[in-house]
Amino acid sequence: MKYLAACVQLRTTDDMPANLEAVEKEIRRAAAMGAKLVCTPENTNYLGPQFHKVELAETLEGPSATRLRQLADELSIHLLIGGLAEQRKEADGSLDPHRCFNTSVLYGDNGDELAVYRKMHLFDVDVPGGLTIKESDSIAAGDDVVVAETPLGRIGMSICYDLRFPELYRALADRGADIIAVPSAFTLTTGKDHWHPLLRARAIETQCWVLAPAQWGTHDAEGKRQSYGHSLIIDPWGCVVADKGQQPGLALAEVDLDRVAAVRKAIPVRLHRRL
Image (cartoon, rainbow, N blue to C red; front, top):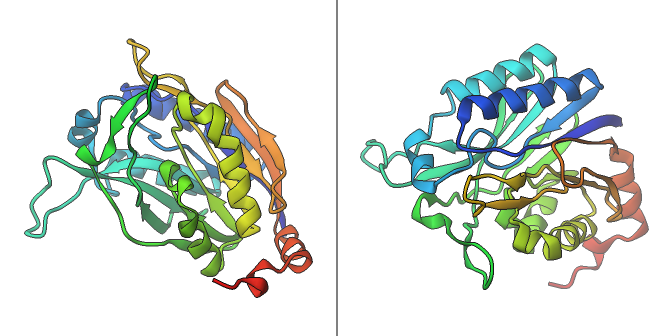
């Protein structure tokens, strides 16, 4: 099976209405170009101060998710939303006022919710000369490994910092993934050195297609939050077949699922595994 896939590259800010307008424009453009699977980056509808993210968090039936679900239905595309702030409830059913989930949602071409993944690994780092972020202050970690069965292949879901944990990607491949999504807001500091090699390694190790829609540019007036960009589509051999660079728009490439089977037949690493 072959079809066109698109990764949307955004420069999201704290202006949610403007962010949703921008992502809808790019999703519509991708669909008009023939894309059957469209993926958006982490923080699709908001990228700003973390404590505001909790205040602005919605349910998956809220206005942001509903708008995007309806868009998938209208355009008859599979749509993977890379990251929305999802409200989190406490054990007693009350709303958590301090933390939300960083959630990726996959919609089918009729708008049905096919899969939900909540970011498992949280970005708590202090890079010398870079940005200090403690995501766990405002985000609760998920704990489910998610592979969605779709007519376009089995899609394994992850988000950004998950990329540094290869055991997750082995688990996705073991659960049958043909395609792995890595929607991200990779910082400029780390992205320039780590983004390409880590994504290519995940493709080579799992022998999957990798779709990595990304944020790019400066997200705040102070210039403190900068993303690397370079939305990528990588084939199961580890070759980069689309790279958006550092500007808004689309990374587009034909996904060929037969390529997955061919690479796995040529180098049957799962049969050779010892650990």
